[in-house]
Length: 109
Image 1 (spheres, rainbow, N blue to C red):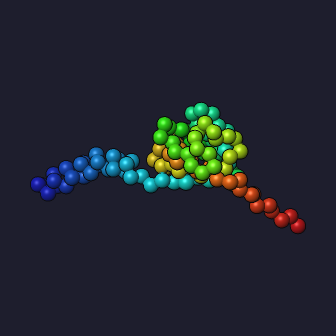
Image 2: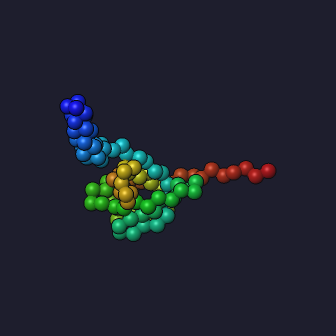
Image 3: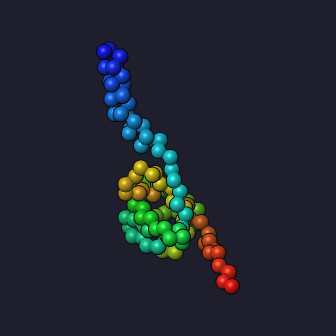
């Protein structure tokens, strides 16, 4: 009986601590695309393959590359956004502004 109670206690403790540990060390994801829409609080990035994701800005959002601040981002800029999968809504932690990407053309026969 003691082993069962000890096991349940350890599982309960693990269940309480796991979300806190996961959010602190959650791996970053990257999304590359063209800024489709932008305002002061958020932007929508289109990867030109049918996916569009909305990202919110925070004070700590870091902008690198061709631009140096969130205010300078414009519609049409190509970016690589780093975000955490667990975030809801998605938060843009790092935004790397890259040179314009040439889109591949399809051969039509």
